[in-house]
Image 1 (cartoon, rainbow, N blue to C red):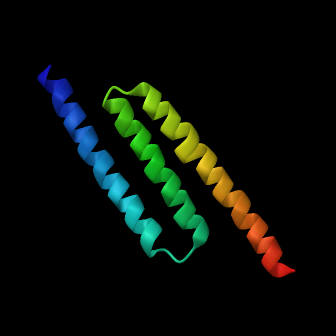
Image 2 (image 1 turned 90 degrees about the vertical axis):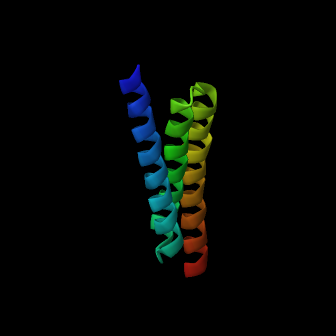
Image 3 (image 1 turned 180 degrees about the vertical axis):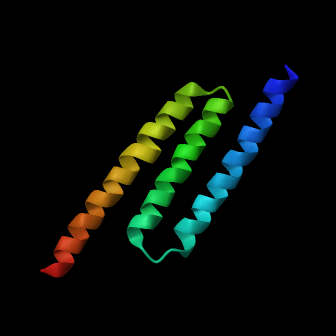
Length: 87
């Protein structure tokens, strides 16, 4: 029992650090694609965090909408705006 609590604590701390690192990368990078991927990573880390907190429905929603659909839409919109800017 104690080992599982220790594992969960280490996992939560490492997820928090990874989320903060991805947020810093998203804020300081000059490349739009890197910032969008970092935002997707933040959402993916949040979904794992929700899974650890025993909320699988919220985790699946966050992974599907936050990490998947939002990141996909960001790239589609980026491609359309780049194509429009070239004309």
